[in-house]
Amino acid sequence: MDKDNLMQFVRKILPMSRDKAEQLVEKFQPMKIGKHEYLLKAGKVCSETHFIESGTLRAYTYDLDGNEVTTAFYVKHTFAADLLSFFKRDPAKEYIQAITDCETWYLTYEDMQANFHTIPEFREYGRLNIVEQYSQLKERMLSMLQETAEQRYSRLISSSPEIFQEVPLKYIASYLGIADTSLSRIRKEFAKK
Image 1 (cartoon, rainbow, N blue to C red):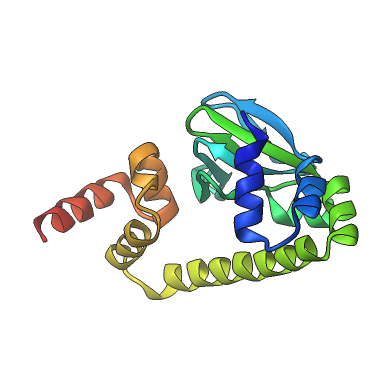
Image 2: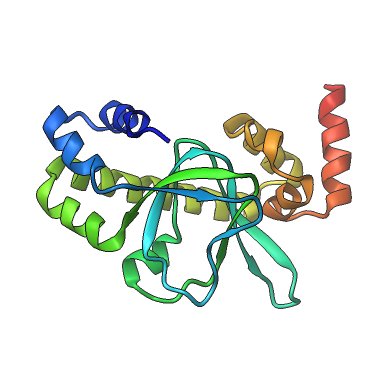
């Protein structure tokens, strides 16, 4: 793993001097996560946020009947963390598990807080990221209430086609709130279009 990739990404999304970017990037540490390994388990406080250099992870929890329900996917060049646990310092209610082998760069809660206080550009990025995360959460909640399974599938395949390359269909079905068989039917119908 090469920090130059992380540096390029940081400078692409955050307009800042090279010195400030280096100050930010120096705090990130590399981690490799094997397929099916956990980045976070429910009941533990999320103490790191991970920038995904390669691989795919998913977040999931259990419903009242004990069924796994996928709540999020994390792909290359996104950040993975249970933000509720991370910022509130409460035990997580979700699991984050690698679907494939992953390479990440992680930043601890303490280092993130320090960077928020010393790098104004990073603080602004953090604010914008929280707004984006909230917006995505609200859109997902409303789509589960107001859209058909076909509409949710169409939205997911349009916004995140890479998920369909690495994620087992049972996790995608769970994320969409439908049975595996319904997803198979929807995929067949879309293939005809």
